[in-house]
Image (tube, rainbow, N blue to C red; front, side, top):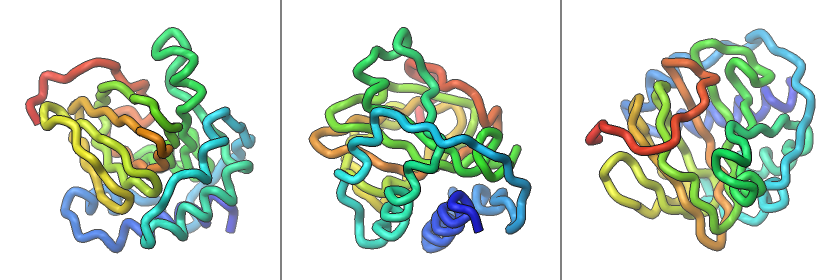
Length: 200
């Protein structure tokens, strides 16, 4: 079993412990064991210096430990350029896809990976066609969804973003590590920065 497969298997096992109806369609799209794989070259980013500084919940610690151990072998990417959000944001932002159109486990129906945000940064409101689930794994942060207002979210708390609904995150002194799932729409779409007309 490859490192990506071990991480994906651990993520699937963690998600299976949640009894929330929004999650079921994502798990239904999960690639079967032995799904096609592609070679992905490891690629580090500056944000990795904060990876081991966030505090996980007891339930998320095993997966966090695996991500920390595997981080150097993962391909970390960024959706934006300095002209979009500035150099400081890029120094504190990155993601690594495990399953999807770009990750080592191929799927055109589901994307799954991890997002890492450094301390004291805001990922501003953005939206995309794909429906999304986030599961914070380590680090307590503030999350915004539509017009709901900012809300403090802790590791182990599932967060659902319907298609097209703007959402944002901001960290304080702790970095944030979160598992993400996308389904529907273009799984490689660049998020649209700015608000949303959806009242959700």
